[in-house]
Length: 241
Image (cartoon, rainbow, N blue to C red; front, side, top):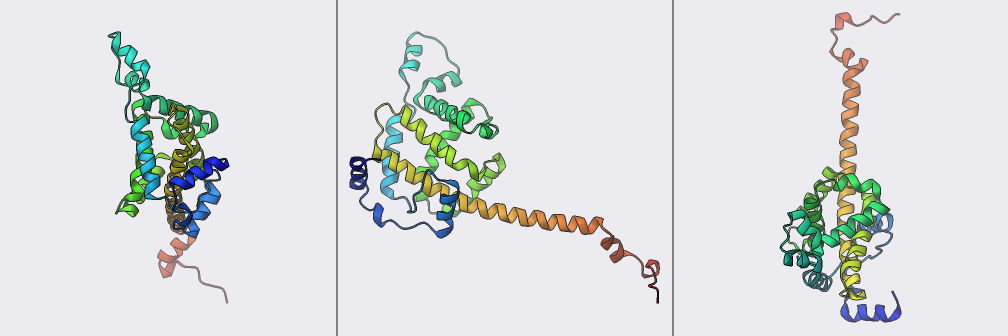
């Protein structure tokens, strides 16, 4: 980002330099898993407002000229075709094309129908704009972490997903993109992801500990120790003197 762009960002977000720092654990998550999103301060209400205004102006189910032409000819469309012709449809087509090229191993995570895939992208963007302003932040982070684990989202995926989202929005905003808007979305993504990554790391460690304990109990149950513990004293060997 050049000097002029940086000045514009500072002008719109004058409190960024004085923002509250992320925790040490969250900063570690950014350094480890988000090399392209190295922001160490929390996002602000100004960032959320800029991102929300951009989303509502550009992607809030605004039909593209392609879908308008189809309607004017009287052609019938399925719901998936309608989605593909909408601005949000073009956005998620661009998003998934980027992921398919740069992170093909994440394909199984998004193997649902096109309708569901579109909803996933809307939820990602809506989550970034709303979750940080929630009173029940911990509950939402916990629920999102469970969802990520269930669908196989790995901590290593976050950076590529963030790049895909920023790339897709930049490419499909049709002149409505700016350094200020990009800065807002980047900071929201970094802040949300740092929270999620720290929570997912803790959840992964707890699952590993639980699995280790299960393995220990299984080994004891199958090994000679269990037989020795539950054998009748009369059946135990008499040690030689």
